[in-house]
Length: 233
Image (tube, rainbow, N blue to C red; front, side, top):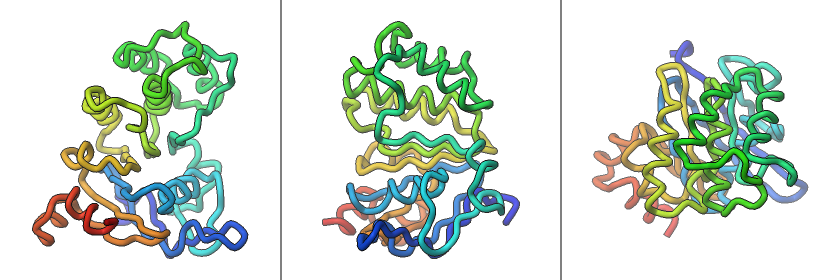
């Protein structure tokens, strides 16, 4: 079982001064699976992802990646897409690719260009001038062009119209193979329900419910969407 484990997170808490962003979260992420990290804004999803990505440290508890503490080694194998932009105002879409290539050894420029084409993004366009939907597609393309072991996408469907969402999800799943896992955080549950293996519901910095998507549906006689409504309504 341990050989199949990517992330082992136990009793993790994160405090900022007097504010507790994550109260007590224990999650295990296995290889080759698609996870949905579900919950409204402010529930603790982003804080947890940033701790896994090594951008901030837990106040209590621990997070291991392949049995080792989060650090330089894990950062080189985890591709994290934040909600905020990660490029400079002067950059074109082509520049964003070069920027990523400089930072990450596993960045595949050919794959990046292929993803740009698929998402109908023009490499010559200025990144800062993109609409929210196109900017979201650019972030996804840059993240998925890495050959990582774990992809974490924080609210990848934000700003993307309902028509384009299915295409975006299909594109995200292309980065999925037997060795890699994907964690998608979202409050747009209906689009994810069809594709996820495992659902984790975060509420007020705690895990309210988690489990295999199929078992959650069977045991509760409810869809993932219905469970979301019952937990957060």
